[in-house]
Structure formats: structure tokens, C-alpha cells
Image (cartoon, rainbow, N blue to C red):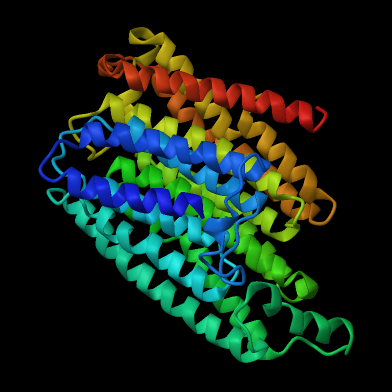
Length: 464
């Protein structure tokens, strides 16, 4: 809860104090506040600090923050801090975009701590509504306006399906509290030998479809490549990491509540995961745009993360945390490097921006290669450790799905190699502006260290 209060107060202050002022300084200031919030959340997760008095402001049957929720909240605030810091240098006047990002972050935190379906819905909308505006915030670009319209229409459509699903679940269980909502079908299935009521099955499918839209899982992914490509780079980085992270935490909590009737839903989650992995990786092979390639990569990673939904338990949060953090660090870094190499425009951000990078800036080319290896899951990066931990935990129950995941990872080398090919094997005139912004240079280096050290620590943890 502490994070919600801090971010709300910060958002209001930034909005009022930044009227008609340069956004850059406020971006750095907000990043520092988010880092402070991350530290407080880690302290709450470890029990070093107690925020129980603040938690009493919201009933625990509506919203609750335990060690796991604090940990994922720290992940969210840390990711947003990196995004705002890397993309802080811009010519924008006014801080409305930073304020909207903070309000969207509050919605993501609500989705992490929800214990009631109404809070999940409020968090989902608090996250989505600012993004409708942010996706179209570059008003001079037609593609940005198109992204806002598509995201709004798909968001409204998925919200309607989600609400209809909540209505069915309430009709079948008589409650909207997360802990109680799965008890009735579980007891009926275990004690009475009865099949799960149709209303509960339909409600579970509809609510899942609403969340699958948010994580851009196939076949509900069709909006994401166009929206990601049309949105400003900073907003794409936010959507592909923060939105996906919050949605997966919320989705796994929901399906965990129905673990007692897992046989009613695991088969179609497996089918969606297979389709998402294959389609995301195969479609990415044909892309020439950096943003569209990363969009389809995001879809493929959503397929991998659906494995966690199938094996989620109250003690397995570390698997999800490892994967989300490693994916977020590497994907944000790739997009940030492309953004720094092409500051003049966000249109047609293709692989040509990396041409000749190894000749002009060998250090940046090495950073690029390591981030690509981590995103692809090449040993011994954080991405490999995350995939290894996820796949090995899933193999015993779903070996076919793990095989498809390995196949998808092999296919992904084809489009991830485009970054390496452009930087090392092609000649060009990559400009040197990326090293002019020293803050970004050192931040990328720190992210590199985080990726490498994090991967080594996790590998040691799992005994490799």
C-alpha cells in the first residue's frame, strides 16, 4: 500500500509543479522517487519495515500486500524508474505524460495486490485509461493516433468481456472475493463428485480472455504490433514490461484460486501457450522494424510465461519474478539503444540504426549483443537462467509444452540475430549520439551488470 500513496502524491505534485516546464528534470526526479519506493517495498517484503497501519485503510478482503505482493510491486516500480530515466531526455513541455505513467503504475500495483474482483477491474482500468492517452501522445504522428484508437477499441472490447466473465463467476459462486471464489467449485468437485457448474466455466473463460488481451497472447494479440509500433518508444517500453508483468501476476493469482478444478481449464491454457509461442516467433522472422520485432518477441514471451500460470503455487513466485525481471531489463535496453541511435524520429525504427555499430562504438555493440543474448535465452545470461528455471519446473507436468518452448527459442535466434548481423556484419554510418548522453551510457552499463550478475546468481541458486 505504501507504494500507492507515494506514487499518487508524486503524480499530483509533478502534474502541478511541471506545468509549462521542461519534462526532463521531472523525469529524473520521478525516477529517484520510484527507486525510493522500490527500496521501501523490498524492506516491506523482507519484514524490515512494517506498513500495517497503511494497509488497514483498505480491507484485506479487497486488497492485501504480503511479501510476494511487495516483491512484485518493487519489480514494477524499478522497471518504471529505469524507463523514465533512460527516456528522460526529450523536448517535451509539461509533465502530463509522467503523471499519467505514474497513475498507470498505480493501476498495475492494484492488480498485483487485489483480493476482490472489483479491485482487479479498477486496477485494470486505472492501468489502461492513461495508456489510451499515452499511446497517442505524439499527436504529430499519424501512427501514434492510430495506436491510440486501436488500443482504446481493443481495451474497451476486452473490458466488456472481462466484466461479463465477472458476472458469470459471481452468479456461479455467489462471491467476488478471490479466496472464496474458488471454494465452491473445488468443494463440489472434490466432495460431491459433481462437475463444475457451467456458469463458473464460462465466467472463467471470459475473465481469462479479458486478461489474455492485456498480455497479448494469441489469438488475442493482433492489436499489439500496430499499437507498439505507433506508440512513443517510452510508452512501448512501459506497455511491453509493466503491463505484461502486472497482468501475469493478476492472471496467475486468479487461476491459482481455481487450482482445485484445474482439469477444467489447463488444456486450453496449454493450447493458447503453444499457439502464442509458435506464432510470436514465426511472425517475428518476417519483421524489419525493431519495434515490431520486439512486439512479436513480447508475444512469444507471453507464451512462455503462460507455462507459469499452469504451475503456479503460493511458493513459486520466484519463477515469475526471475523471468519478468530478466525480460524487462533486456527488452528495455534494446529499445533504448535503438532510440538513442535514432533520436530525430521514431518512425521507421529499423535495424539500419545498428549498422556499423561495432566499428564506431564497439562497447555499445558489445552491450547490444549481450542484451540480445539475454532476451533470446543464451547461456549464461539472466534470460537463460529464467527460461531454464521455468522450463525445468514445467517439464514434469507438461513436457510437450516445454518442447514447443525450446523449439520457439530456437526459432527466435533467427530474428534476434538481425541485431547482431546489423551491428557486426554490415557497414553503415551509425552516429555517436548514444555516448553523448552519459547518464544513458552508464545506466545501460549498470543494466548489463544486473543482467549478467542476476543470471549467474540464479544459475547458482538452481544448481547449474
